[in-house]
Length: 199
Length: 199
Image (cartoon, rainbow over all chains, first blue to last red; front, side):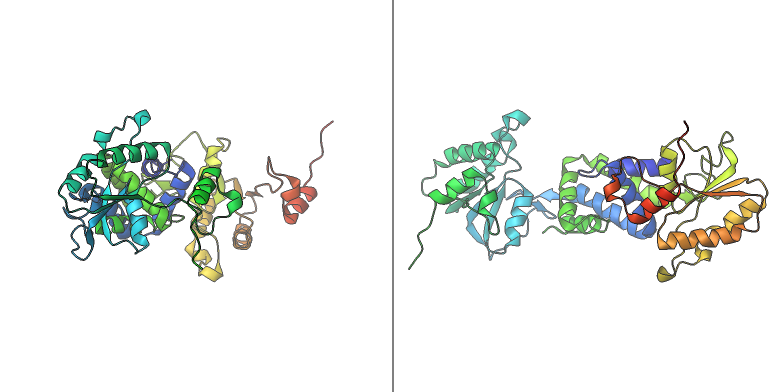
């Protein structure tokens, strides 16, 4: 087999969820594209990896030192939503409902994978809150074991700021979820946190 | 959202079978790779598109003017297996059973998509056979309507070489296929072409 093809296939196969068969299909597809388009594609991908940086304020991915959310004066700078990763931030942004700030931790505490609190942007979060400009912190962290550990650790650190309102996002049955297939813990939480209907 | 990220996602999403959600996951994965690896990846992919060529003898993908199969003196140069595309050639090579030459047509005749005989490497096949060095032509073309049309057209052109043996690959029930789920045409062919068991 051609060395050039073999290398292209090996490189595609390094991406998650892409096996050798898919990688070969992708390589074959490149031959149907014109050379300039493929150059533009590979350049954009490399430029993203080389030039992307993290916002110095919230740790979001950004083209500039400060991301568009942090530089937007129309957003509510007194509310911070703490998320694990950039993808979570994007999911919340896609709802177009939240108008506050973010703080991206960059992961969760995981002793198994050697990730401690100092590997995450927790100190920076505390520094931000210590300025006195933050009135509410929303913790939008996943309910995995690592997520709960991280949540517990952050809640502990937040005890030094009794004036700041702290909340976690609501757990419950998702819209469109069938009760029959929802796990017991979620149903238990949904029952405990039931809301009285206004009549 | 970051322009750099948006561009990378758009470019990934141009690949077949990759939607925006997968594209975003791939872009995020790049951040876990070091910059040099991503550079190597994108360079290999672009180099493949820019430098790959078609073998001047059989139209296989090749790094050199003549592909390794055509330049191999130990292979049987008197047998040519005609396939639609390079992927088919690779599938046959993977069996390690075939020791002859190939001829890649580069597609099938498809009036619907504006592909006529002159868009395929059919004339080159005839020229090769006209040299008198070819003793057998194996037609390994798919059984789609376009494939059958192409097969019929080539068979017609091959009539001018009565000394050349012509065969098509066997149609039948694949190993591991359950008869219950095999289409009727395949079963009909498999029955018609049944083989007597030696006793």
